[in-house]
Length: 188
Image (cartoon, rainbow, N blue to C red; front, top):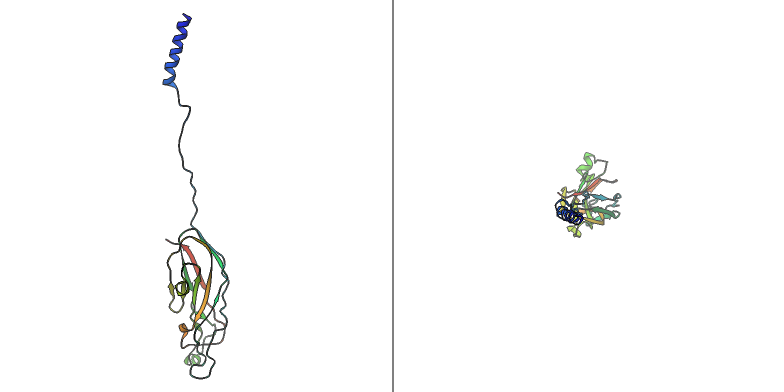
């Protein structure tokens, strides 16, 4: 009888264990994520001093007019870092201005207190020379404005007075200046 009871108990245990048994392994999946905000940073650009501009010092009809060519100076190299496609906008408070305005007599003789200038950006894009990113105050022109890829590199700025932009103009003696703003932003 004991054998019969033991066999019955064993068969009941075997038959019922499958119906009521739970898996010893549970699985699930999940995603780990993080984000990085689109960001551009740039070091401070030092002021650019182009120096003395060339004027015609020979007496005669063209005396004190701007000469041929240009004068320019390059800024300190600065790191520009953007982790996404970006674009650069350049603007100025206006042409280079001498705070001393010409009198009406001086203006009648062709003197003025504003000098148009250009700003070029070195190493921002693939272009060189006039195909670089640039800005002209003569027509408030923005040139080569295509967005650029994510980047981390040193760039520099060139302040330049092209005498062709100021043809027929006699600048008053003094110091001329303008404030340039460079804004680099994530391209939309």
